[in-house]
Image 1 (cartoon, rainbow, N blue to C red):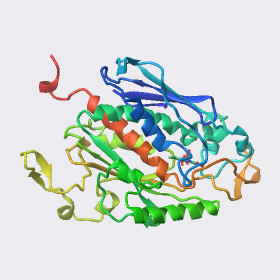
Image 2: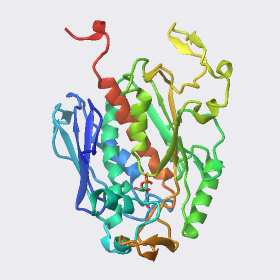
Image 3: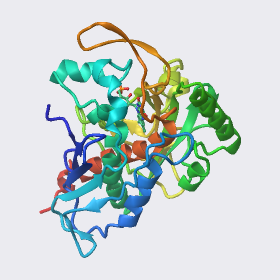
Image 4: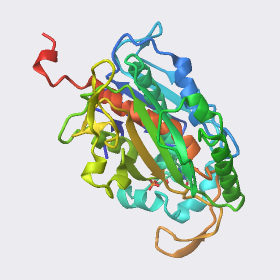
Length: 364
Ligand SMILES: Cc1cc2nc3c(=O)[nH]c(=O)nc-3n(C[C@H](O)[C@H](O)[C@H](O)COP(=O)(O)O)c2cc1C
């Protein structure tokens, strides 16, 4: 039950439901002395906000972040950094149908199975509204990582069968945000856009894939065996709603190759630094970063709530037909991009703040 906290050293706890008065969080472990750029945190939230375009849910939330503690004269004090986002555009009556019928492939049935009761309004805690809190915490984490600098960018690589056929790389966020679908190729983005609008017109939904790349992560982050960096990233990213697959580096494709074709040969770069000639490992070996970009592909399913009558049952097990209302994302991918970046930032900052494992790096 106590499962609303992520991270060991930079620890974030989130709270709140989709249609309650507010959502928020507490970050414990943020080092003192960070001059927090609250406007940048707000910009991160604006990228996730509902109602940005015809591709997203029409719910209107201003999502103004209020920091309640842990800041003095613009700097973090090392004490808990608490923040709040008020829910403004809740329409709980839209969810009356979901009290008496389980939404197929949503969390209604399983929350009842675990807790014996649930808040049906907007999916309650299972709503992606909760991810706004991750974006706030992730934006704080990013500002810490910027000191190294580590840079993280995600983008939509595929919507249903419409794919950007280019090797994963770190794009500029401005290029990603140039299209509402958040694919950095304008032509492919236009096709994705059309596919989502057509699905929405039919009351249906689409899934797809997001790629996230983190550059600047030094070699040596991650703690085997149970806290391997990929295990922490998996915990972070698989905790996002609607995720259906994740792969690192060569991923599934790599499993078809031979070792001789797959291995990343070692070499040195122009400054004499040890590096690899290819990056099929996706930046992690043995659960520890190797200094190459971390490359992850993440698959999201089509949005569960669709505007079609669907076969379901009541909590008592009687057959019924669900006619869902409410405002929903016809495709979660465009809004998933900043959330994925946030979860990667939270994982990386936690790995960075872990105590050194070498005697020569321990402080006296
Ligand atoms: C950015 C984002 C937006 C989402 N919007 C919706 C939505 O509008 N309607 C919906 O039914 N599910 C939406 N979801 C997915 C549900 O929250 C998710 O499917 C549900 O909690 C069940 O969890 P599961 O799919 O991981 O099993 C969204 C997910 C993300 C990441």
